[in-house]
Image 1 (cartoon, one colour):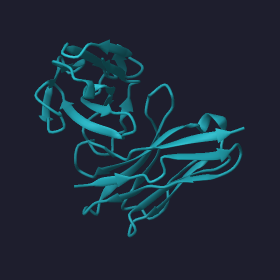
Image 2 (cartoon, rainbow over the protein chains, first blue to last red):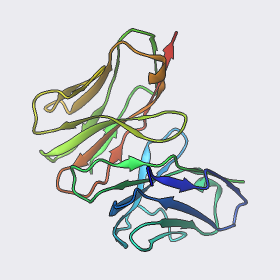
Image 3 (cartoon, one colour):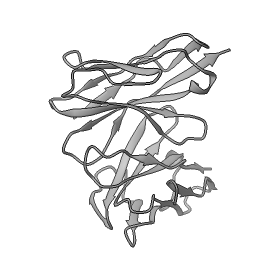
Length: 115
Length: 115
């Protein structure tokens, strides 16, 4: 696609429910990143993918969070048994590769609200 | 661990005037990149300007320029001839050269532009 696409744009859920957030990167981009932006905070790194593998999962806040990427393209971030503190904007970004000079392209994020 | 600090939660500038946003960072690395990202209400992060630490010359992009002081670990953004469309959240970010594209962000500065 022309840009990084994320869906849904907004998600309201009840505490304890599971949610899936989707990211569709720019075609041909092998690297994909997930960040979380809580109110009044900067962006917190969650996980990145090179192709379908995730070498660095250190940013995932708990074992309720998981992510996968299939076909080197679409990625899904899953949050199980959501808690109120999970409320945030979840941003996805992609780049051509992991090379440090590559520019990151961001999507518009998913605003998650846990009631 | 690397950290990025933005000490100005909010700033305001008159249209056509100049404003400077501050950023300091902490790292033991000598080679890295620094960035300023703009986040309008659409939530999509847009790269404004990038500085490579090994370059002494300050980066410029049209009305945007930086004052990079490596010894002081300071990286401020100057916006000249401010326009209403410049109103947004601005984030300073750091990335170590040679690593993945994992960015470390500050907490942001909300810039208002008064007509």
